[in-house]
Length: 144
Image 1: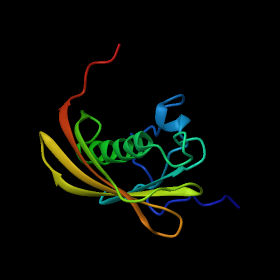
Image 2: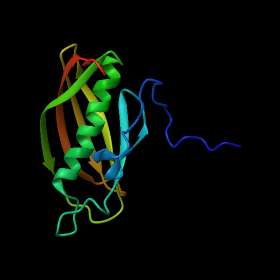
Image 3: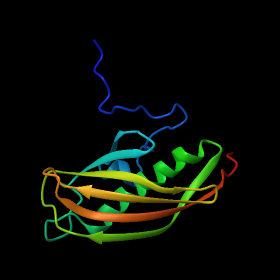
Image 4: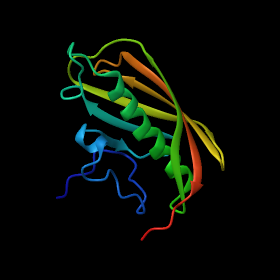
């Protein structure tokens, strides 16, 4: 018997997932639910801390941009590309251990711009950080 995936929605076939060696992969970020209306990812606290032992603010931003950009890409399909153009993070409390879970909600999915809100919580569900991300939609550059 094959183990079921850890998410309730599977990624589309055209999504390759995180690129091996990418920053998100090195940080341990995993998308655990590919619901295009409510994308969910996790990131371990360990290895993503600043010198005081709490999650680094930049780690929250990488998690948010990874999730929001993926949500934007899902909305525009494989023929288009998205790039983050604006990110605003509000930090509410620190995390020192466990896992950060991020939930991305689409605010606006347009043909040129997308907007997303990403909320991150600790293992007990306490809100750690809220991020708003805007992405620019472009034609996919030619490969080769």
